[in-house]
Amino acid sequence: MTPRVRRRELAAVLLALPWPFLAALLHAGGWPWLLQQVDLDVYLAAADRLAAGQPLYFDPPGRLPMIYPPFAAVLTLPLAAAGPGAAYLIWPLLNAALAAAVFARIGLRAAPALIVAAVAIALGGPLAQVFFLGQVGIFLMALCVLDLAPGPTLLARAGRWLPFGVPDRLLPAGVLTGVAAAIKLTPALFVVALVLVGRRRPALVAVLSAAGATMIGFAVRPAESAGYWARIATGNFPGEPDAPYQVTNQSLLAIAVRFLRTPELPLWLTVLLGGAVVALTLLAAVVVARAGEPMLALLLVGLGSTVAAPISWTHAYTWLAPIAVLALLRPLPGWLRLLAVGYWGWATWEPFQDLNVDTEVGLRLGAGGQLATAVGPLLGVALLAGCWWWARSRTASRTPARIR
Image (cartoon, rainbow, N blue to C red):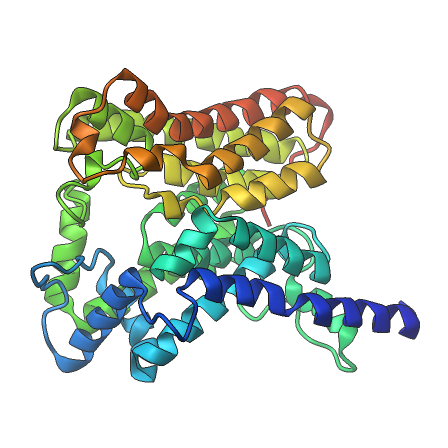
C-alpha cells in the first residue's frame, strides 16, 4: 500500500468514525438528556449488591430480575464503579465499537464497516434495542465473532497502519467464546460446532475458558452460583414468569407456548423443539463450512442458538444484520440473499409489536396474531434450512473448510 493510498483510507476512516457512536447514543436515550437504560440498570444494581455483599438475586417489587450468573456481575464491576452516569455513556460507545468491529470482521474494510454499523443501528431493530435497553447482545456476538471468524484478525489488519509489528491475536482462539458461554449459555453451541468442523483445540480452549470464568463466579458467590446453575440444569430458566409467552419472545418454543395458551414452559417441548433447532443449526453450519463459507457457518450458529433458546427477546437477534450484509458480500443465490435480508428487515420492522399491549396478550392471540408473532422464528428455521439445502450441492467438489 502506497503512502497516498494509506492517507486516503485513513481520511475515510476518520470521516466515518463518529457515525455509529452517534447512532448508538441516539438510541441509548439521547445522552446526556435521558439517563436510563433499564437492563443496564439491572446489571449495575447486581454489581453494586455484589460489592456490598448483598444477595445478587434479590428482586425488589417493580424491578426487573437479574438473569445472568454471578460471573456476569463480576464483569460489570468496572461499569458500576464508574457510576450510572458514566456507564450510560461507556456501554453504548463500547457496543458501537464492537458492532463496527463485527462488520469489519465479516469482510468489510474499516470505513464501510463504520458506515454500515451506523446505518444498521440507526434503522432500528435488534441492534438499536441493545442500545436503548443497555443489553448484552452485541457484546456476546462480538466475543464469538472476533474470536472465531476466519481470515486475518483485526489486529493483523491494523498492523499495516503501525510502524511496528503487532501479534495476530492476543488470546488463543476459543477464550472469548468461553467467556461468552459463561455469561449466557447459548454461545456454548459454538463449542459443539467447532468439534464437528474439526477445530478441537479452540473447542477445548472454549470449554476451559468457560469453566474458569464460571469458577470465578463460584469463588465470589459459591451458594448463588450453585443455585443458579442447578436451576438452569433442571430447566428452571431465570426471568419473569410471563417471559415464555410474551410476544417479544421470538424463540421457536414461544410460538408453541402461545399456541397452546400455556403460561409454563413444558420441559418435553423445550427439549423437543430446542433440540430440533440445534440439530438443524449444526447440520447447516457443518455443510456450509464445507461448502467454503465458514464465516456464514459461524453466524448461522449464533442465529440458531438464539432461535433454539427457550427465551429469545427481539434484542437477542443481533446476528441478523451481519448475516444480511454477508449474504450480499458472498456469492450466494438470489433467493438465499432475499431470505437473509428479508429476515433482517422483518426483525427491524417488527409489525407484531403493535400487538404488545400487555404482557398477557400472548395467551389471547387469534389466528392472525399467532401468525404475526411466529413469522420471525419461522424465518430463522427457513434460513437455516435454506443454507443447508444450498450448501449441500457444493460440498462434494470442495475440501472441508473450518471455522477458524
